Image 1 (spheres, one colour):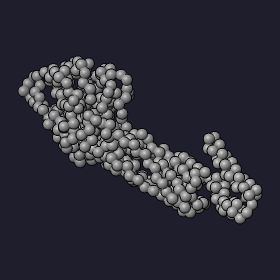
Image 2 (tube, rainbow, N blue to C red; image 1 turned 60 degrees about the horizontal axis):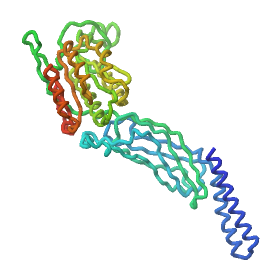
Image 3 (cartoon, helix red, strand yellow; image 1 turned 135 degrees about the vertical axis):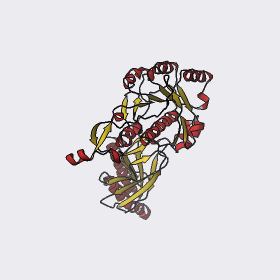
Image 4 (cartoon, rainbow, N blue to C red; image 1 turned 45 degrees about the horizontal axis):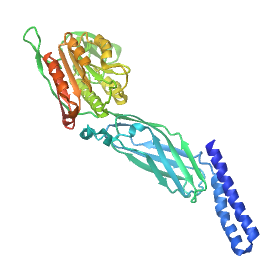
Amino acid sequence: MKKKLRSIGNFVFIIALFLVLFSYAMFQGGFVSWFLFFSFQPIFLYHVGLLLYPIKGWKVTRTVSRYMAQAGSDVTITVNIKRAFPFPLYYCICEDVFSDTLGLIDNRQNKYQHFNDSEKLKVNREMKKVIFPSFKRTFSFSYNLKDVPRGEHVFYGIRIRTGDVFGFVKKDHMYSVRDQLLVYPNERPIELKEQVSSYEQGSTSSSFLHLKQTNIAAGIREYLPGDKFSWIDWKQSARTNTLMTKEFEQEKSSELLLVLDACEHGNMNYLAFEAAVELSYSLVKVFQQRATSAELITIGEKNKSFSLQSEITANESVRQHLTKIQPSGDAAFTSSFSEMLLHLKNKSSLIIITVNLDHLISDKVKKWRQKTPNISIILIKSTVEITTMLQKQIQQLELFGINVEVLTEKELVNNPVEVSL
């Protein structure tokens, strides 16, 4: 409605200007007045033509150099515009409209240098380009998105504004050109320092990432990428005409549980949560490479669990989930512990990655110690947030045999990241 009123107003203004010049020429007379009147005719015809010229019929497309990228990489965007009738246009202001999720900079491990001042990583990524198309039927422009952050980013459309030299006529239109960019978490190289702990009975020592070895096959299933060649059951494969592999007892239960605290805490540092997501994704890759029977659980507004027994699951479902996950949920992290207890029946090891460690979590973890022999907490905090009270709380947990690994900006800026389990 506003566009129609503006177009009518522009048309009335141009007609009024034409009538004023015509009246001036009629009453004044003479060469000068009629020269001004006839000199205005080309401008008048151009403005009328510009008012009647439709820009809605333009074909506008967007090309993204890659629709799936990793956090911290660069993406090139190309916008192509094609019109059927080459009406002369003095200028076009093209604006690419995308979501606010691109308003952050992710320069990988270097971003943790601003751990205490994350506002420096916020940018205004407005993309506006002035083009002078003249009589061209097709024209395009490109721009780069540098250091794209993790997440699901949406490009909604392309807005084009045009008009005359004097600003009498202005036209704009929003083209619905929707695209999506998925930016996966940055995979950090991790140097695991596994602590060896002894069971209360006997003298056998066990690594945190200990994996049972058994030669007893419990069943068969279809072959998946990453399975060992020696596991293939050739007799069953010949009968079904499909590659089948043996399934062992250790594959039926996950021994290790990796928990990511995705609850929204007060005054939460988004860089700390990004580090938690990156660390979770990197540990998933480590467990996969070591063929560790593990399970990932994220606690937030909605709890989700993933089995990490196959490469396909780790590379797709987990990666997709960790790409889109954001802090959510008003409930405290401890309120979801009751649901997690159901997953601890056959678990010998537990890893919790969190950005918040309060007394409620400490009390719950101490109770868990009775069921789970190996518990490790990875706490991500800035150095200024590590208070004397927090240090005492960590010491109390360690007295109960619970390993607490604190990662600050000093450890996060390094490659690889050293993690003690």
